Each structure stands twice: as structure tokens, then as C-alpha cells.
Amino acid sequence: MAAEYVLVMTTLPNDADAAAFGRTLVTERLAACVNLLPPMASVYRWEGHVEQETERQLIIKTTRDRTVALWDRVRELHPYEVPEFVVIPIVDGNDAYLRWIGESTRDV
Image (tube, rainbow, N blue to C red; front, side):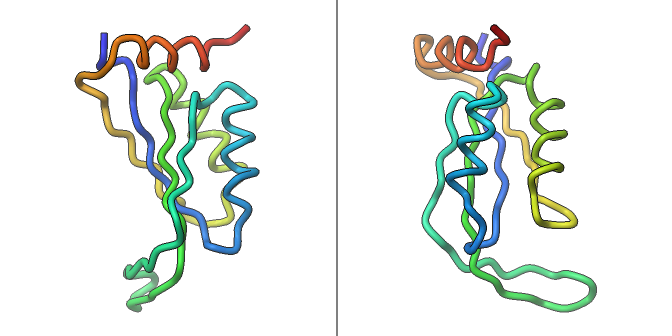
């Protein structure tokens, strides 16, 4: 049962409206919950240069079935040319919590 649930990670620039981004995903039932972590420093290679920016990590709880639609929507909303979109399977967890994820992302 647990493998049908996933965590999806993405980042946003610190000046982006992360709360609105997360609210959109939850409102559209693409996510049960989006955690907005505090600003952090990110160091990365982009176009041959090492860059450093302040970003916010978002952790999105959803179902494996919703990841394609979620990815499509993230690409529409995201300001980055190449947004982070990493899907991590949940291998075990609180059954009631996992059911809540399923119920919260199910089309009504």
C-alpha cells in the first residue's frame, strides 16, 4: 500500500510566492500537503558556472498516480527553466496518514 504514495521535492527562488504555489497544488488536489521549508543557500552548477542563490525547498505529499499531472502543473507554475522535480517513494508509514493523502488527492 505505501509504495503508491510519494514525496516530491522541488525548490523555488526565495522571492517566489511559495505559499501560493503550494496552495494551488493542494486546491487542485495534486497534493495533499506542501511543506514550505525556510530559505536556504543552494550551490549548484548552471551553464558552466558555479552559482549560489537563496531558495526554498518544497516537499509535496501526493500519490504516484498524481505525479504526471503534478509535474505538468509544476512546469506551468515554476519560474525556473529546469525545475527540480524528484519523486521519492514512501515505503512505509502511518496507514491513516497515507489514506488521508489518497483521499486528499482523489478527484471529486
